[in-house]
Length: 283
Picture 1 (cartoon, rainbow, N blue to C red):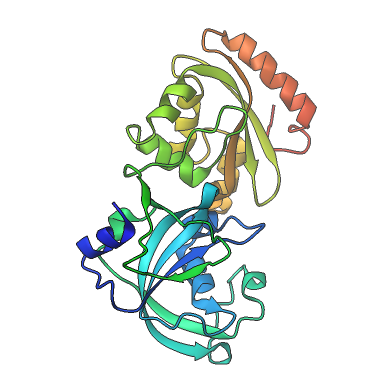
Picture 2: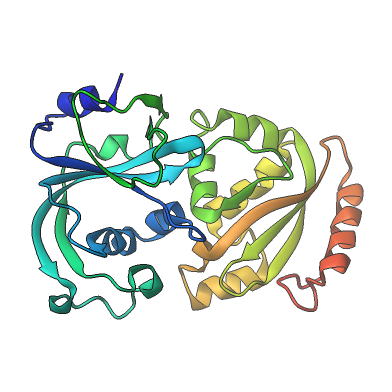
């Protein structure tokens, strides 16, 4: 199946002056910005350096590795105006991304595509620098993947993984779509680290028992703090603080490891990283 066929099936007139956008900025995780705060992403999308979106609709994507692009919505362009006429929210945190912008596009998300968001992946082709392209019926983009609902991402390996809290919740709540994550995280015990991306502080913990790392991380997904005293206090002060957390693995152990063995490795990493004195560990 290609993108043209999919859009037509959902009722979009493909001849109605449509452009495709592939958003990607070096040094920024636009997908994370999009997931954490949709309005921030949409402000970024609506703000352009010049009058380049001379179309009626945009089909929006965020860049992915290997020249791929992940679908994040269809938008109707309602109006175009100079930036001098636009008042941005005071709390917009990415002013550097829109520095020098000249044009603002009023857009509204079109209904009928929400169930495909984050799931449809296309091959953008060789021209990654060409971030906006006309949707051409004679040159359709191939769909390389339609992910199951609730899918997070490919499991990258124990030492390579870094999982933001929002993705952790999605992964835990959708075991079928993320079957590989559940099987592998359940198969090992180990020592993990939680990074507060806002403050840079770290927490080191140990996971052991029947469900391994998966079982321990499930507690964080359900509560936002997993019983950690300092994380509980941070949540009390700021109910949204869990969204600053990022989870990774420092060391894996056989699931048959005893509690004492896991805690000894935990102690070693606490000492190495200084998380009692400078981080989020209290013991």
